[in-house]
Image (cartoon, rainbow, N blue to C red; front, side):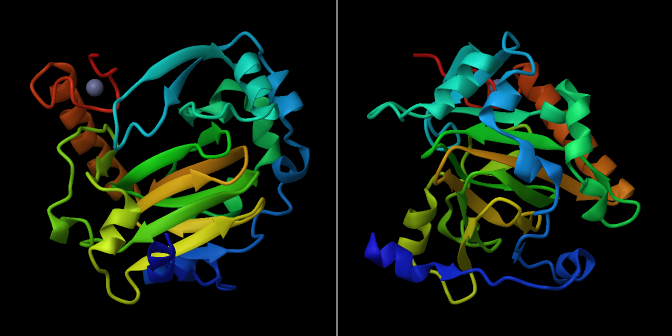
Length: 270
Ligand SMILES: [Zn+2]
């Protein structure tokens, strides 16, 4: 593990504006840029769990990007209750991913300030990633820029420059609606050699904002139970073009024409 860690350089923090950071197209952490958002102070597991305890949710078990795709049904209340207890040793963490918390509970929109972050005229979405310590999203890249806001708990991002996975022939065949997946984990990629400036690591605290440019590979693991708000964004032209392309790919997948049975959206056959 020591070898892995030495290859990962700590990502620097910036005091620049979001527009400057996005203009450079390099990952960057904006420390405490969202620390004043009410969500950071006010979102507790009790409060979120009380919103709709019986709401059905679909949990992802383990690392579906690298391993098998396995889902488990639960309810929002039972799941958030489970995050308050001790971790269950030896069991793959259950993860509530890409959850439209603000869509499900519009009153929570008063607790966030996305308009402070995104460039004028940008289109953006808002999804939450809610999970226990050790919950992990395997190495992948997205097709749009992302401003990720840590709201509750602590989380680590490993970031690899575009090309680092492609050079190893490690882009996975597994299909994902919105991302490209790697067939190696992030440590395995750096073990095969990366140059300075290609591999970054950053730990996010509540209130921190991380800019992840489109096509930068990243693997993400929770240090503690955590809520992350992601905002994928771009110009209207970029967002519509990417959306149309990914919808077409997903349409082919759903029709059984593309990567049927080998994806993050349908359970693996066991
Ligand atoms: Zn699928």
